[in-house]
Length: 157
Image (cartoon, rainbow, N blue to C red; front, side):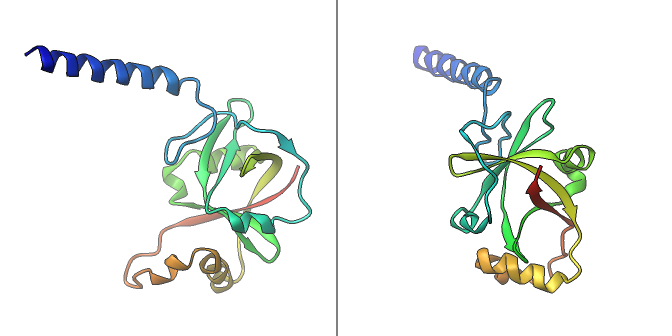
């Protein structure tokens, strides 16, 4: 009985500690959102080709009350694109539409950017750009329904 009580108390302390720490988070951790991104701000890059070395990046939206998420990105027609799968089920795509000012963290550096909705004219070319970076997506079951996806172009503020 004493061991069980010790285990329960330890678990409760860990849960309370995690909840307390969560309030002071900065960067997102995997699927858990963050707040204001940490790291040195860097000048807007000449090109975003270096993002090909990163499977994910962090995007901070809603400057008045920062909210950051982990996202994928890819290059298409010399533009950096951040997709949002099932955007109607998420708040951050709507926040970008309301205020395009954002910050993007790639590696350790944070960039002040503007994210604007991008509507590609050639869906197949966009799909090829995505598969070039994420080849595992080429193995998608063609019978699986295509999810709704919004694309955001990352540009200078």
